[in-house]
Image (tube, rainbow, N blue to C red):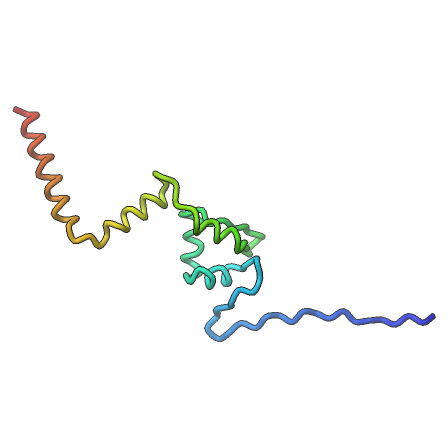
Length: 119
């Protein structure tokens, strides 16, 4: 019986579009794919990893993100008192038109309290 050799086919490397955005096609994302999935920049995605505990793994210099873990992270509200919760609260006040007036009122009352304590 003769043996024939079969060549193993190499998987073609995915081509990267001109804009550099690669659409995710699997359950495990690279940094670029996870950023595209969340519609943020890669640097913003890494900030989310550091500041808001976005789940991921690092293999040498490569990052990997599990799609289901990202979805769970998105569904879970930040823990009360966490940095993420505080930043979210601060962001909620950012465009409030009454913040300045409220702060002035707070400082005015503090000055009154200090004057009463002195007397």
